[in-house]
Length: 491
Ligand code: GLN
Image 1 (cartoon, protein in one colour):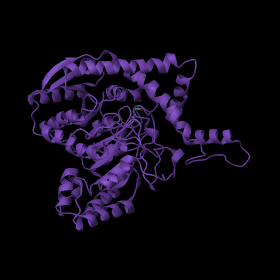
Image 2 (cartoon, rainbow, N blue to C red):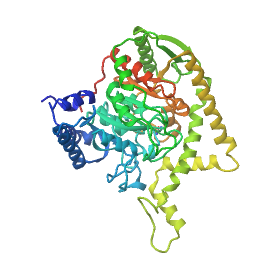
Image 3 (tube, helix red, strand yellow):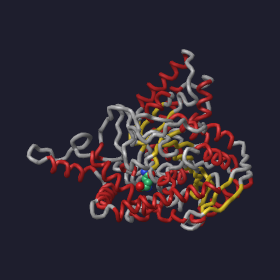
Image 4 (cartoon, rainbow, N blue to C red):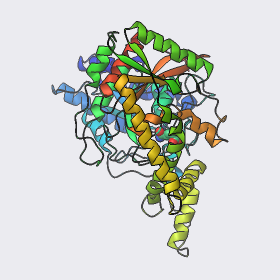
């Protein structure tokens, strides 16, 4: 039998349906791959071998009985550790949740289970999804399969690295400011942030609730779309979930793969077309735009003057929301409790627990956010940032009058060496320069491999209007059909 870990999710789904391979065999091959490479990659915080084999066997049993199963039934998946999984440890990369086993499944998790996906385990991440390199995980970093001295991106570096290293064909990520797309770009994989509200936040441990968006990580655009279709759609348990069906993302990906983009207007964002990106990234960006033009796309230049304020606005809004969301980690209800010796007051125990349980980046953001929301400063900081958010939305709306999708590099630089940005938070924040605008607006955006710079992967970002997720998949699949696939060196 060929190495099933190298197959795409779509191919695996077809082989499983044709009974050429069993779900237990597929799960076992991926668990073996995990065992073989985790020492070098550390993509997982928890591997659920028994749970995965039991889920795989259940799919095989159903199939043996002749049940109609979905296209991803029996396909393995990694789930970012910020998504609750009933009975399976969920830490959000933080010591404060060490050992916590959630009593319930997130909507994303239940949809995966219902569709027969086989969860291999929970993937590593920056603590509470705050970071751009996975170095802020309380459990140690993940290493980029392309070069294990470099970061895999963040915060969802574990999900992207697991997919790039053939430990799983698919993974779930969450994108608040770029945490699906930026890791995808630097690991040579595909990562999509759906429209905000297009995927449920129920059971997602909240970072910045007005921005948090779960989405798919994969090695191909079609695989990302197949997973998007499984997890997306209205959820009555999430008050910001959009009560509309998922756009036909799978059909759009297949249409795009035919390589015809005639009639598609590609908006090049003037403010993002080179400036701020290192030369190799800018070159790969220009080459991928040329490739899209060869497929029939028409290029228009658009200007989004408020995008330059996106990063500072984000770093007020996200910390403000997190300072409120993270108040629930008080040592009383979940996970860690420190200093509860029967003599200390409740406040002292809370304070000692939070001091011991949160890492430096999380503390920095809680302090910043609490300050920005305080009575005397609210209008000057949080209020201003919300106004900028409106301006950014208007920039997008105006740009989408002239263009069907907007394109930009996903990241300003390729994967950087571990440790090179941890001492300067601002340098770390810059990694999301190009991804943050679409979070503030709420529209979908995808990163798709766009070639190499100095031997390391570069991503092209495609942004679309809200609920036009299908459009970005079409363009992404077209680019994928036009450029050679990126394969990381053997580990
Ligand atoms: N890197 C950004 C941050 O640290 C984005 C994180 C994310 O999307 N979860 O906030």
